[in-house]
Length: 223
Image (tube, rainbow, N blue to C red; front, top):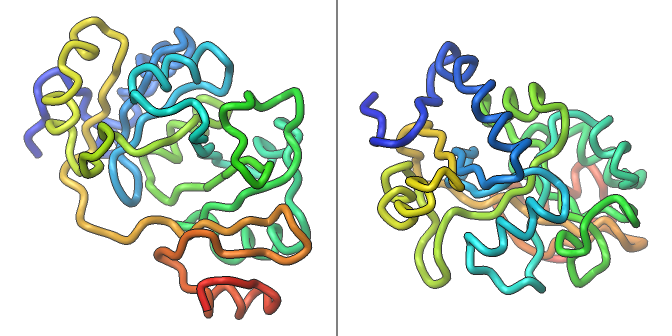
């Protein structure tokens, strides 16, 4: 695989392991990371106010549009004070790791307000991408996630697209790019709100409502 200039190889198991130390140091410095996921490339960082502010500034995203969290264990959810409701626990057992994002209640005074959506919850996903999952496990904490693109531009599916658009940030060292190769076109994750009495699909995606209802029959939305 040809690696984009100024990017860190993040494809093979050896490359992933070799990238961990520098990547974790970058996260600890409150800087922004670009990384491959099971769908598109994402931007993210640590879950603290400074890191989230740096992510908002780089992305150029309105501060009232929340980011989601990538986790690699249920303990990470618990430490943030988020609650896996009964329905959410059933869905997690069936579909995580996988392309299912669940909006969970809780997290007051532990999760920055910029990560909280209009329904009052915090969106969380356990990614099946082997490199990203390994990184989050090694870091030991969740990281934020949003698609790597400027407003009005399609999300990046390779590292070179990110470098072409954010070359100055890469050169300054404020953006660290992990190159996991060219990603195949895929559906986004399904997003389901688990903060109410009944789980509600708020964005259709890779997992259909029919599949969700096989696990939790009272899921509403997406017909």
